[in-house]
Image (cartoon, rainbow, N blue to C red; front, side, top):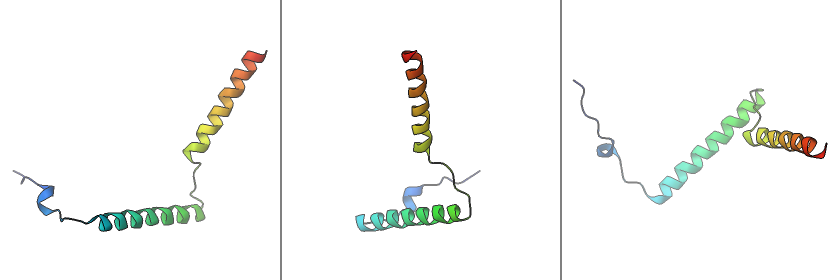
Length: 68
């Protein structure tokens, strides 16, 4: 059968500084990858922009129904 894997057995104790620096590095990598994709033309519309457009559309529709 398969062996039982215990992830805690291999984990090393990390300091708060290491956790923070790893988070910062992951964030930098994510931003770098996003900028690179945008330069290649692989950009997408952010979710908040779509939400704003939907809100404007719904508000306009409601205003049209109420004011007529």
